Image (cartoon, rainbow, N blue to C red):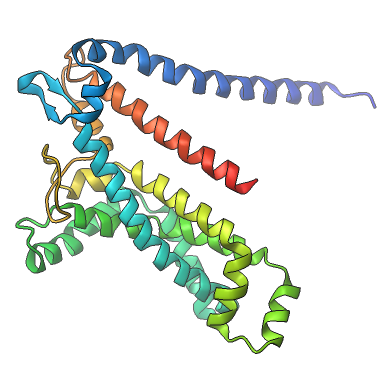
Length: 281
């Protein structure tokens, strides 16, 4: 078959775009590493990873920020996973009803809402509740971040769970119903058993979404430098630390922590995506 000029041009275009994306992805870590060298000269990698941020003592450790990111992402993923599982179960059984269609439409809308809106809602709704009914004096705490992040990641988890449930063979479902299984038993022993891989991937994707978010943590975490020992305390995670350092002096040594923090985030995301790919296979 003889290819037309348009087909040849289209093939060249998509080839160029594909290679360009690969080049950008490969260049980004190199740029970050090069700009992190001044920070690594001032402090060893071990010190940066396992000590806390004390710029007055020329110590630029990121331990408290990394810990805060991981702990908030994990607990919000657990809460979000439970809520998303229940939502996916309801949508699977009642997706043809008006309430099911309405709920699915709301889930899609939630996935498109900017995170700054979630942060504002957290300030108006969640923070006052935390301030009034917990030991937190201001309400700006890790617990506030966990609650808002758990709501943020519900659409990501729910959609992936529903896709997994829809892939379950109808014959398997029919066999479960023929044995007298009710909806809860059908979900627990048939649907979840067949789609557990997708539920696991949904949890990982939710964790990745939560740990990479910036605005929610920036707005309602309190952004304290200290190492948190309670969810009622304020703290700062890696993404909000990057956002707060950006307005600083570009040539300053503190600003170089932005690049090292970015490398840490990229490493976490790469590891998460590796497990997702392996699990899907």
